[in-house]
Length: 158
Image 1 (cartoon, rainbow, N blue to C red):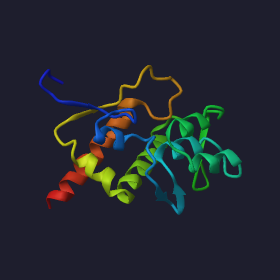
Image 2 (tube, rainbow, N blue to C red):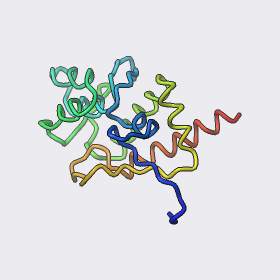
Image 3 (cartoon, one colour):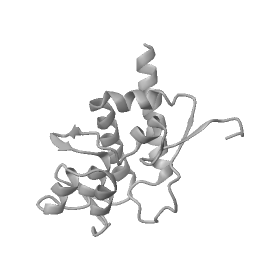
Image 4 (tube, rainbow, N blue to C red):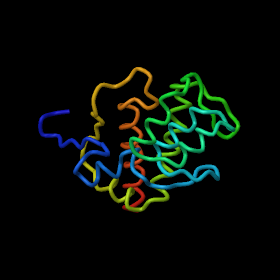
C-alpha cells in the first residue's frame, strides 16, 4: 500500500458511517440456515457453544461489546453449526463466518450500501492488540469484506 492509498478502518467505534456499519458488532439482524441472528458478532460468539447450551441462544440474540464478551468463557477447540463440529480457527471456521457476513449484507441493504461505498479504499481493522485466540483475525476479516465488495460492486454495475 502506498502513501496515497486511502484506508478505512472498520470498527463499531468509528465515526465513519461505512466503517461502523461494516463492523461485526453492529445490530444488523440476518438469517443463516433458518437461524435468526442479531449480529455477526453474536453468531461468532454463539457458535463457540454446542447446541443445547443456553449461552449459544443468548449470544445469537446479542450485539456490540455485550455480544463480544459473551464468548469469553467458551473453550476454543471447536465451533458448532448445522449439526457439524468444526475445528476452531481453521479455514472451514473462517468460511462459516464469511457466510454469516455475506448473509448480513444480503438482509441489510444499508450495510450493503456502506460496503459498496468503500470502493477504492483499503479496508483495515485496527482496534488494538489482536488476541492469538481470536475467532476472526483482522487480515481474514478484511479479505472477506474486500472479496464481498468486489462481488457486490460487480453485480451493481451489471
